Length: 203
Image (cartoon, rainbow, N blue to C red; front, side, top):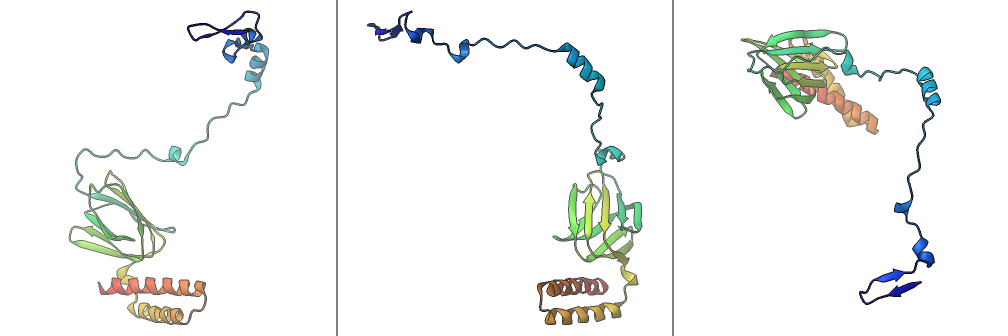
């Protein structure tokens, strides 16, 4: 039974059912028991599985970032079927990124750039070697190493200008007569590539 006194606090009689109510904080924690025989048996039969390795575990350690600016840029230029340049030390490369022509010098900030059809220029002293690339990616590392991966590439001096003009005319005609989205897309790609080839020859 409850009663209220002058201090404004409600008191319960010992005989009141409310005075015997237990709260969650009053419940004693259940004692945990461990079956030692089960644990020992599980240790004997439990599989010993090492965590799976990631591709990084199979790669050579990345060279440290030099404390001083190197004088040369190390370039690796590879295709799916061949390696054009392997650990070649050059002064600069200019890659046809989708955001525009991007020059890469020693000490360039780490960057990943998607390539579009265009000219890749490799500068070594007074010598400049130009390749036409169809697409790909350029990975510029902080240690002045550039990895350039292209789907197709050919030295510019091996491109036949007559075949380029012929292909440009053919794809331009296909684009004007295309009726489906697929035909338009294929023709547009052909026009873009041959236009870039034509620009590479006239540069």
